[in-house]
Structure formats: C-alpha cells, structure tokens
Image 1 (cartoon, one colour):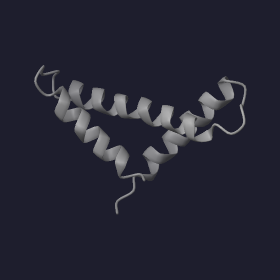
Image 2 (cartoon, rainbow, N blue to C red):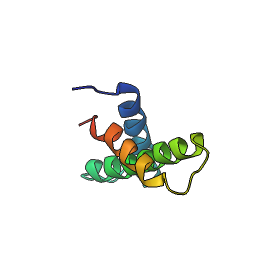
Image 3 (cartoon, rainbow, N blue to C red):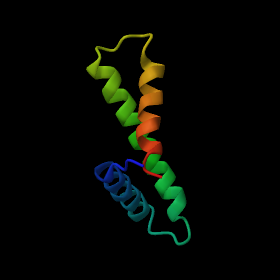
Image 4 (cartoon, helix red, strand yellow):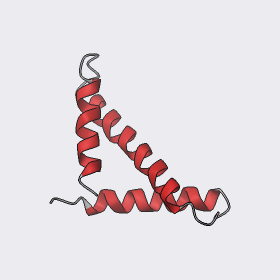
Length: 74
C-alpha cells in the first residue's frame, strides 16, 4: 500500500498543534488526529479545485480524490 509520509507528518504536526492549543488534554489524541485529518482533507480538495480553475461541477471530484489520498495513510 502507498503511504504519503509527508502528508502523514503534516497531519501529526497539526494534531499536535491543536492539542497544545487546547491545553494538552489527556486521552484525546485520536480526536485531535481526526480534526487535523479533516483540515488537511479540506485543504487538499480546495487546492486541487483551485488548480483546475474552480469549475463549479468538479468540486466533488476533487473532494473524492483528496479523501483517497488521506485514506492511503491508514
């Protein structure tokens, strides 16, 4: 299975940042990882959509593509 280690590292860093911003609560690491994953999913989809010139009928395609990239991390 293909793993995007750079993307996985960005998600980990974002999760850690969010966790620190919230005062480092214990036992919620997965919650922060999910939040970070969602943030990066949205950013990837948006970047792909912008790169294509923001066609109104292609946003869903970019959302699925981004989800596929994120799902390859697991």
